[in-house]
Length: 533
Image 1 (cartoon, rainbow, N blue to C red):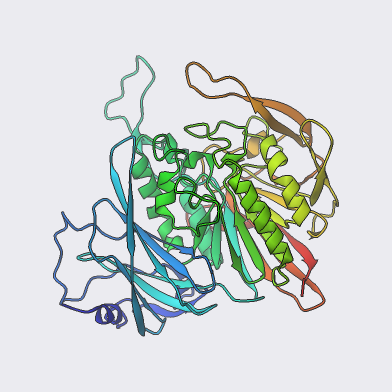
Image 2: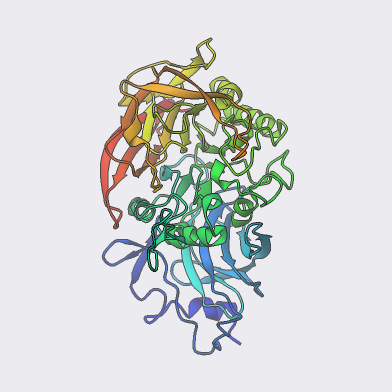
């Protein structure tokens, strides 16, 4: 039997893995034409017998996450519909030198709606070099080896780029169309049943044109909770996104549509199984992975799960207050420690539901977040919050403090839009154009106003849902919004600056225009703050 080193190195031949590649840079393979390319799956060497295709599943949905220390730890994950043996990752360098084999740990969940079992493998690779470039192969017994690449985070202040969007769905079709009563259609077509659209594929292609170090996914990943077949929807999501997520970590926050009825006590078991995120103090087996933090260079990223504090009844079950205050206690402790760390300049929060939005007839802002999170953001000087939930692009002026009114309207501290000092206030960005078919860019208030959910009513006897109670307020915080185009993402390039000076974050929001991920810049601006050392 071929050993792991031979298996890895066999793909670095003229006829193998790197036949068309010239260099690995920024975590992506570059062909001689210079375009980003996910590492291709390749045929096993002739000495490896072909496995039974009925009993041996392939490596599906290969994707990456940063570990607890993003500079030295990465988790490689993939899923199957059947159990596997000897799941492992073969790690090496871009020039084909094999370093070691890392055993994957298997986990699974049973989808409560269909009874289908999903098996997920997580290989936690530690002792990596900061800012190191790697090639890896994911494999289990009998499966075709699938390759990817990644770059670890820098240790200490350094320049890098990350991207962000939310609310994607899938570009696939999940169920047959049901015609209106009295209408007969022979062989009705398949339609999308998870709010996806072709743009859900386009946006991923657009991210790959930027080739970020990592990607922040601001919740509502694939809307599986709406789908007829939730397992197929997750599979379609990963098949679409593995071309990016196997070459750079995709770091998520949980949105309301990750709440799937019956999948765990509070509905997040599928999300918690597909991802292996850094576990935090105060979490239980029920809440594991729902909030976490990691550091890249001089940026501390904090991911929150907002359904814990939101009033809106937006998932398959109403779970407000599920952590019993544990998430808020963790957040305050995390923010306090981060602001005391002189090596951290920037605090970026990734979450789903929003503090601000000027869309009418959409979800609206949620008073629960304004009550629970915003005072902590103010006290500890959070620089940037990236969200989804509203399906358009919008950003705020820097905000600090709240008006003494029933909706706690955020107070802008400056109105300049090209250069923003985040030491004076937090910039909120709504980036919900990841591909969902239900855009909110066409229903923006003009002039800007904000609908705020202040409570919910009694459960509807038919649907069981609690209807939102809205109050409409002025939106003095609104700085920029894109009414013309529904789909896009933001890219953030960090410049650490010099001791005694300022550090900057150049922000570009791109409209995504077509199936090749064609991009058009909607706006560019700079966030700035004093460097802390």
